[in-house]
Image (cartoon, rainbow, N blue to C red; front, side, top):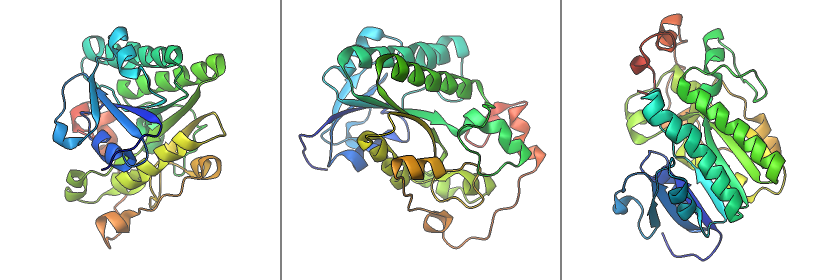
Length: 273
């Protein structure tokens, strides 16, 4: 990492699994600030400014956004933790606070981290190459809050002319997830840190369109989500595949109804728990 004096980018959710990778990828081209509700290990973000902020605290969010040109919003409570005490304050009230503070501060654009779970129940049907205009079929309350965020982004674009880009993130491939082995879920939704950073760059530099919802995966085998829209509108050009991340592996076995049982019962048995 090295110093820069270019556009100022706030990355929220610094304590999550994606933010450190993204910060490293963007550092050479942007002046970065990171934020989270809790303090983060500074060794994960060398020479990057940290501002603590609870998304539910509008004043703290405003302080985190002050002086920023664009926001990459990764902060959220994931999966279905305590809805009233944690998820609604962070993922509903907190997302509103972020968009409203950005508007008031004159922030030029927001990249909002949504999720493939917004259309999760389509996968039970074996649907492939699902486009972004498919009917929402959220598989968790977490996904419901992300649909709210997408709608809020549309509103702030239409009402205030903000540039807003919503990314339906696939299955993000951390070293731990790669080490756990290969499977159909990963094959269908594979997303490398390199390709995610590339997609964010596309959103941070796009002139047109000024709003969009985009599926965000790498070059998946038998993909559940289509990335044709991201390719055509943003110039997204993913580089990674199953082979680049897992090596020369045989195609994964098709999932059965039992693999989706967690959608109807114990969510702790889900693929991302």
